[in-house]
Image (cartoon, rainbow, N blue to C red):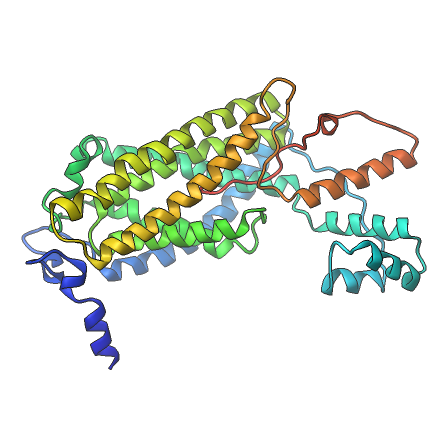
Length: 385
């Protein structure tokens, strides 16, 4: 029964235009075509990326952070409390006012002391600046190398300049070695992001990040299976073009280089909006989703699946573009520091408040960037980031 179901799912008429089938993707006469089993190669590649990342962060990112002056703010740790700790771990990290009053009676502490304890306890779990810098350094390095590697692989290809060449001789388009490695490395990297997402810094758009990674992996895998290689390489190139600027902006922000951070972020915003909201939908998606069914063959189920994955990605791009524009507004006169709209604002606020209480207790009132109404960018982007 499973065998029959598999045959129906992978029937030629579902995935290929009339007169073509999976048999046409069999290697012959020195021509190589993508195969399903090739995708298994991405798993060991993803594991290699995880190992390389650990080595990179220790041997390259950490010394670089020291050179740029990235330091962590010393945090006051919450004192051990047998009443408040279980509540923090099992019930809520942000108790309501009524819960705080109850905990105050149970622990024998004042309401103010309970509030301060929860602020400090939350801050203990916040990722340190060095950790965020190392993550940004790793992603910056990959996106930068991947973009130029992809550009080198496509610079002499006609479909980089003429979108209709994407479908020339489809589906019998032979696979080039550069396309093979470009695909395997990109897919392996995104798989490594899925594997490491539990240990990476969590952001406000955590769910959107998961959706983006899953949609990207599905789109890359799907395009490989049905030989949409040319379109796939263009999409990956467009995605890699802007992300290195965002990661660079975060690195300089953690280092306190505000002007450089602002320049890099502004560059990222311009490149992101142009590539993700102009080139991708009006050139690549149009060519991929509109041109084939109208001019080559009748719409197939795979076209509907391709449309769905493309639209999910584009919806996420629009979502992130809105957040980016909100951050860009903060560069206007009078706004000197940009706030990452995807950051965990509660964590930021709790740290600032706790720091404020400590200063007041010491009899000092200090002015800083927080007084202009904006907190510093302290979070990571995605590929969206």
